[in-house]
Image 1 (cartoon, rainbow, N blue to C red):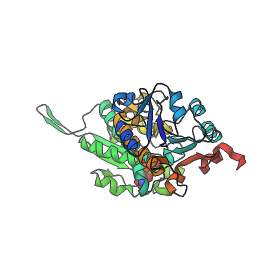
Image 2 (cartoon, rainbow, N blue to C red):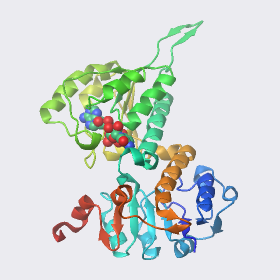
Image 3 (tube, rainbow, N blue to C red):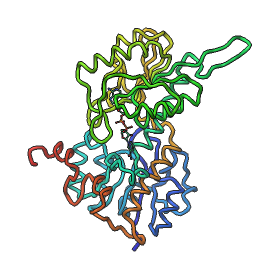
Image 4 (cartoon, rainbow, N blue to C red):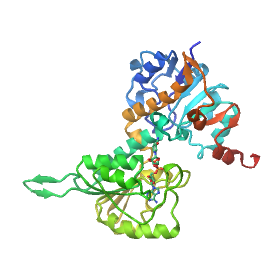
Length: 377
Ligand code: NAD
């Protein structure tokens, strides 16, 4: 019997991305799978029901959950959604386990096999499944577009009859996947770009994109290619050097993050006060509290003429391409588990094992198990 892969409509307000795009639905059917989607599932990303020619359309989420052996989602499932899932269902999507321990507990209790896209190991073989990267790329691009929109200046140099306009000075703080895409996008728009990260390896990447790297003595490589938190002394050293670059910038884009920790505060109120009125800060780290002391997540505020924008769920604001990329990530992960149209999970595969949050009534991801079960460990 071919397995049924089903996709409900997203419930989270303002989430416009969708987990399955028509091209991937067709590819799943070619793997011998039955695809079921809830009516209007793709609409928020402009994929109409008629485009999913190979899928079976159902009217309600209840019908989706009744038939599903595999469920694809973008946002973590709500408690009500988990309640509707059958025991043994495989659920793949973002799970935000640190934010929703009670949902993880429910996934465990309902014996759902959940694979969390944020847990996909960042190894070469899993690059095509790396949704953190694909969505960070979208966010980095969109942050620059938002900045260009809110900025009081042009990005490119313009030579006009009314005089020559100098290119905008853009500073990117945090040069992971989002930061690199932000540099590339700001350069394409013609800005002069400077960038900074605590990981020394980023210097070459920044320079290869035609931007200037701000060198500092602080090196804070953590584990697995991530950054570690800075000491108080390092923070002060960083702020002293960064302050003049921040003051000179007309646009600052901040993307700095440390796994499992709140966003590091890098731009202080005093640094914002030193900026020119009309300057803009786009803080896409605002999901984790923000890199600027004045960021209010989800809001746009002004301080002494400087605009500080703290957008949430930035990838959702470019829903069509963000969904295409995300859907491909899901497909590449799911296809590891499908043989001849049937579900065959290889529990020796490091990608599958590393991505699994809950299975057979247990929380498999150790830090989440500690968080949810604490003393029971
Ligand atoms: P992230 O979202 O965790 O953080 C963004 C950036 O913020 C990082 O570059 C980090 O060094 C930087 N940062 C943290 N604290 C800072 C501070 N105080 N000041 C300045 N910068 C600070 O990062 P990410 O985009 O998820 O990438 C993390 C790592 O994973 C990178 O090394 C990246 O190359 C690597 N990666 C590997 C793969 C793969 O091999 N498949 C895929 C994607 C990313």
